[in-house]
Image 1 (cartoon, rainbow, N blue to C red):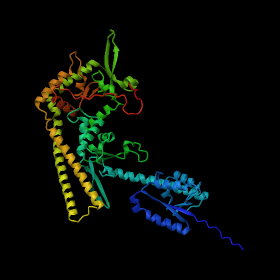
Image 2 (image 1 turned 90 degrees about the horizontal axis):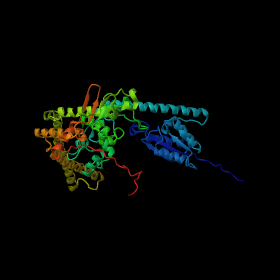
Image 3 (image 1 turned 60 degrees about the vertical axis):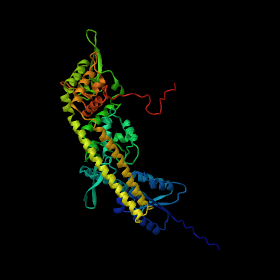
Image 4 (image 1 turned 180 degrees about the vertical axis):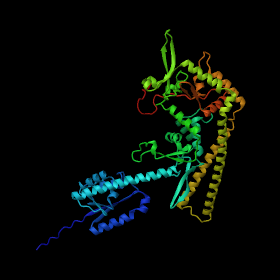
Length: 557
């Protein structure tokens, strides 16, 4: 008599455990709690637990989760290593109803079911519909929570508190106040790196005193060659320099919530929160930098404009619409040719774009040059105009001295801490083989070395700034020299010389506004007074055949 023993098939299970943040791990359903409930659930139903996937600190609004993808890959492979995926709730698996159904069906095609401990469902149409409804509620709750969190963070920023993440270079995070169990934090100026930020702005507007104003690439080269390190001890790149030059944080207005978290798209101004921080850069300097960046943008001002023969091309604009005033030619009734500046918007779009204005070229050129000669190039006027800039330079010198003292204090303090650690090692109180101690010593050495390098550069800057005093004789010589060199023998003008004195001309119906940078004027004055030829430090733009080694290679000679 043969007795057949029935074959018992054991259901193999995989646990998927997830929390969004470390805070949720503390206050919500933590990973250990989910694991405990999941293991008990499998034991009660006789499931064989074959694998556990743990996802700590990942949102369930998308599938960009390493452990989730590893689980899906295993669950869709043939043969699948498990028969069911056990989760605490469907929201642990996904908080998007469409994506939830997509992956549930993807697993089901390979014979793998999704099971929730707290939301048990069958496979009939009614239970499928209930699961989809719960997924919709989970998705709605997730979006509402995100909205409330973002609203709270925006308000936190408006009150001047830091929401987290790494602060911009030149700032550090400090504890401000405690509210319940939360410690509110703010930004303060970091004296170790603040002068590097100020130097970047100064190089962009004025140069280093031996050359004219620098571009972003030249600044990066300058910093790297002189061993100005980034906050991480690395080399400077173009993107970092440009970000510093355009970040409003440095004038005391940190912009929070500027881009969407999901697609990084820019948000409208109405959704951006402005957080007040201690300013590092004066607004006048920041605005001058933005104007220069805009003028150098090839999408706004082509390179040829900087070297064209017309006096005001590239710096002359329509006061009504802001469009550039470009040169046009025409013929008079007597057959002669005449030239005039006209609004480019009107020229392109007609009067619907801008009513525009037209003015003869010679008339506007003479008007601008005569005004600069009569009103600006007078020693007394120059002294009045430059007074505030000279005062700022003196303030900058004082700040450098204070910064130098702070650096020396930090160097001394760090050396003392290192000395105490070495004494503890020699006396046997501390063990040099302790990993934490080694890391602490390395950190203190890095702080000391960075402070020493910054102190040397600050001292050099102080030594060089002492030779840039502006005297009455210097002003007289500069005014006379500028008037002479701006004029040509044939009645024309030296365009580059005028550009050193005025950087923007706006033509309105009843007036012409001439604008320039005081810092640029002072830089030009100092540079001209230090060279016998009195050459103005005017920027030039040179087109290159190919900026990147990619395509359009010129054939060999």
